[in-house]
Length: 194
Image (cartoon, rainbow, N blue to C red):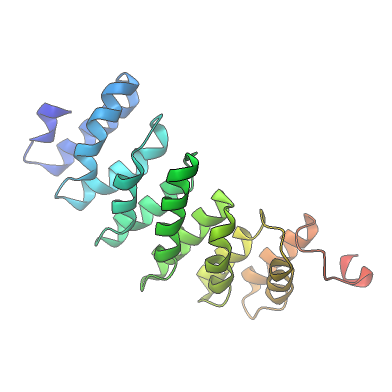
């Protein structure tokens, strides 16, 4: 990656990063990835975010920086990647904090991706952000309702019940799907459970 890192064309750097992660020894990929994560071109940073889950380890601060990236597509990809990585306890707290901040971003695509990642991680510190997203625009609400699946909390039951009555049919369907899977049954009557 070091020779390709200096290539003037971002497409070459993107291709080199993909090859590095795919065919190089894990250590070489881990060593080359930070260069791509800090690349001045957003297409390279986005590719670094997309490839992060394929690495055996990723430095949390680097991925957190990508979650907060000024480029919307980089931040969205980094949010998604953050939900696909198994973090140490210390890194998990930092990553969840970054995702909670991203769940309040101005851009709906970033909010949607952050909420999905919080649901994937299932960390209790992310629950409030997911519940708040249940009142967002329809695309974010749908993702937020599905992100409730790993949580066991009375507020989750209420949010799923509200989703079952949502004005957006896909949000209603997500609420129904979770209910069918046994998520959020705590507050439903026997009649509603049937």
